[in-house]
Image 1: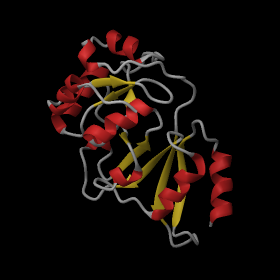
Image 2: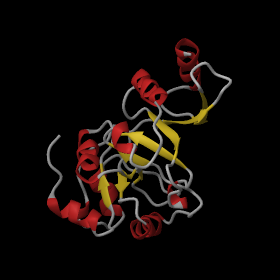
Image 3: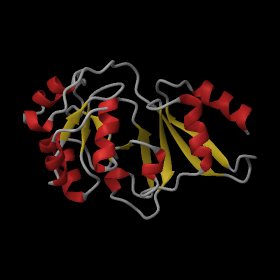
Image 4: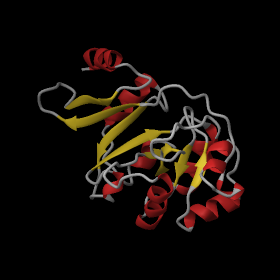
Length: 202
């Protein structure tokens, strides 16, 4: 995985923004604090009513912030890291820019992203671009375009392609598993594949 350079970690702990590579497109990381989210949303020119997801090194790491049922582990094992983003209940309401009561969590697949979350904990997982501008496929180029200093960029090419599929997991007494799944945004995993998994694993 490699170590994350100390200057990048210092920037994050000071409430700053760091660009990093993922298994799809470059992302922008901040810690999930109000000050850091202010900077992130200003940099992206993103509306506050458009929440961003959190990236984690593992679902175990997400347990500090959200309720992760055993069912979520099984679902993720069925499709692999980075392919699904899971919408889960927060233990206590978080900043509205993270979704408030319901938070979207993606388990990273890219080694640099995993190392980053392993070093600092959950970080924002939103594309490294200004809202409405097509994202680039290289984190160095994306960070440069946003005006970030080199110390705030973890360089790396990204394969591009479709983003993760956003899946909402909610408790449901109607299903044998005790949970229902809704596709909020189709991505690399087709809705039909998730439906087929649910039928097989109930």
